[in-house]
Image (cartoon, rainbow, N blue to C red; front, side, top):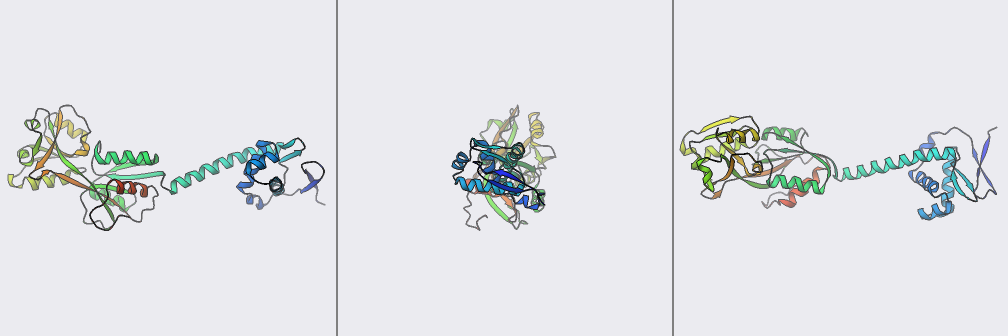
Length: 332
């Protein structure tokens, strides 16, 4: 014959028999609401006050707790005229319940923010330095809007960044120009002026603006990274009538190239987004032609099939800051 133990029925004038048996898989059917209600009862030490705080009937709350105890095959509360208090086993159980509910709520919040793109990681491929200018301002505003999103940047050439996009190593790439071989999503963005970095004592530093013919015959440093190749093509186009130019190619980063300018090893072509970098004995001048400032256009590239939730808010910000007025197919 199976034994049974009473669970005090609140006023002590009746008894509900809870059968002693080993818990089965039914234990996993315990709902989060039942655990929360039990925890609230333990905090109030009063069934009536707990029911009021939960905005449920006291009879409903009492019935749910009895069902929970029956499912667990254990008495969680001692019910007396003086209140409802957890048993020793009940206190231990409810301590663990508190941790479960806290972890569950944390996991739910993380899931919600992640699915909305409010948290997670966004990888941005960049093609040029951005110590100032539009790229800098865009990332700063994005951080204000999505402070829980970790942004990492990847440097590379056009081909390297397009390959990274295809392999999902990069979520979005922001580069100069439009690439003919890319058949996925694009968004025209901003343009930046072409700048020449000069030694402070260079004769051209005394001019407010430098014209392309002024660069003929100068020793010009060409970075192989970032927009360097495109700047070289632009230089060759602008100075095609002036014969071969004195070009030296460098794998070094922008900071080292500026150091070469500071030590009078040549002048450097760059974009205005990098002019926030300060280097002693180096000044910046914009390069102009007959139509005014020479500029290069930037474009955002991404894959429509990219499922990273953090990408959509970033693209939304780009569209807000730099709306596409070209009349082409709108960016998704």
